[in-house]
Each structure stands twice: as C-alpha cells, then as structure tokens.
Image 1 (tube, rainbow, N blue to C red):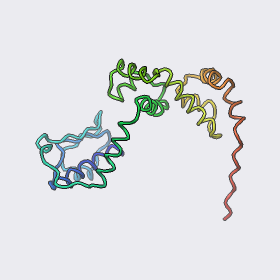
Image 2 (tube, rainbow, N blue to C red):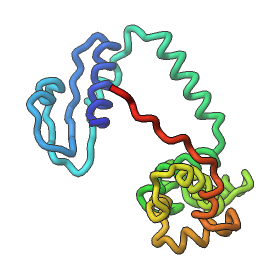
Image 3 (cartoon, one colour):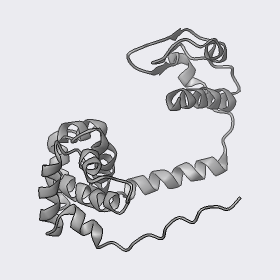
Image 4 (cartoon, helix red, strand yellow):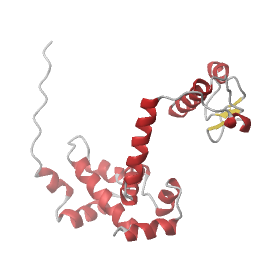
Length: 200
C-alpha cells in the first residue's frame, strides 16, 4: 500500500507541476490486479511482479515544472540539510534498529541498503571511532533496555526481536552489558501505575 501511495503521489506531482497529463510508460506491482489503478495510471500494469517499479518515458524528463510550492521546497531543503549533517554512525544505528527485527543484520546488508561499499563503510566508521560490530552491540543494548521497560514483552520475545538465535545468547550479552540478568534488571525498574478502568 505504501509503495502504491508513493507511486500515485509521484505521478500526481509531475502532472500538477508540469501541467501535462503525463502517464508512466509501465508500472509493476507485487499484488493482484485492480481495475481502479489501471484507470488512474492510464498505462500498462504488470501484476504479481517480483519487484515494484514505476517507469517513465525518457522524453517526459525534459518537461519543465511550471510552478513550485515554496513551503514544500523549504521543508525539503531543511530535511536534506538535516540528513547531510547526520553522521554515518547515526545512519548505521538507524538502519540497525530497523533491521534487527528481521534477524541479525550483517555488514553486507546494511552497506547495500546505504548504497555504499562494505570496505568504505568500515573505513568511515573507523574514522568516527566505531566498528560495525560495536554499533550492533550498542544498538542491541539500547533496544534491550527499551524492550525490558515494556512489561508486556516476554524476555524470550525480546531475545527474538534483537536477532538472537536463542534466549541464552541474549542472557550472556545482557550480563556483559549490565552485569546482571535481564530479569534482575527489569525488577529494578519503577513500577508502572495500574490502568484505571473506565466507568461507563
């Protein structure tokens, strides 16, 4: 749904910005057919495709925008400036947090997501005083503390969310971080107030 929303936003943006009823050359989506989308895009759609793709005719790229939204442009400029000032270490931390729930992230997969060479990524991290291994451990440590603060999360679930193969591996790592077991650390947290039932 997010992919389709992004595709429709992009098509709508180029149509509104250029003043032309531009239509894609081809759309590929990873789901079953929908007549509504075919009518809106007004172009061939490949359904149940292995990848989602939005393809425009090269000639359409030369059509200039006749107007722009100054407020939106200011927001985009601010976002780009913020991204450019974010350290590579912080970017890797963000990717690690996102990837951990899908298993143990590897340097290769993170480098691929960031569109950088593995060796370049390692070199830049070293220049910032870190390594991929240390960032993975730090990110797991931070997430472990956050998850343990949620009483609804079972410790075995937390071990899974952090990408550990078994609960024992998580226990050993946590004891190295906090010098106590996850259960002991959780027991030292302040008790949350019980939820008050709503009277109707």
